[in-house]
Image (cartoon, rainbow, N blue to C red; front, side):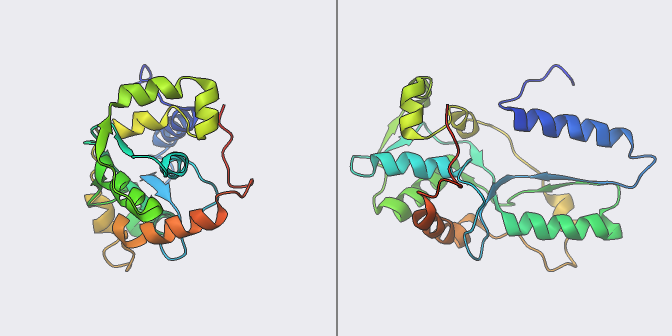
Length: 212
């Protein structure tokens, strides 16, 4: 269990936190939340910072004037969830008895593939549809060059999530939330809001992630 690797410090710290929490489950009632990749608010598009899936928008900003390729085959599922769903569901499950001693995946029950999500973002942001595929190994090689990824403003680890072959079972969460009225919005329902917010704030230094 402790020999596994992580793509970044964020993943490592969350793993260690859950290990500690699991150890006290018999003494203290706990609720463990495992969220998907968090997007902005589904109603306003607001987000605290442009990282994760917003790196796709950074990428498209740089190449909007050129023919746009898909970054790899994009068969992996990209499990994106709006932040308001995470906040509302977490608050509910943390306080309601139904969440006691549970581990809930707050993920999209119908996630899009990377290719589908990329195309949806591309068409909304640039007005164009990608029409050829650039091997992900090529993009990874380019992002391994510090000067290139700083210019592109995209972290190298982004490609790892495009190839992550993981599926998340959110059956338990949906069962626990069935009487709450809290539901996870589909990606297509809020991506327009997310992109509109990005376009208005893409030059805000407080929302930019420093790429090294």
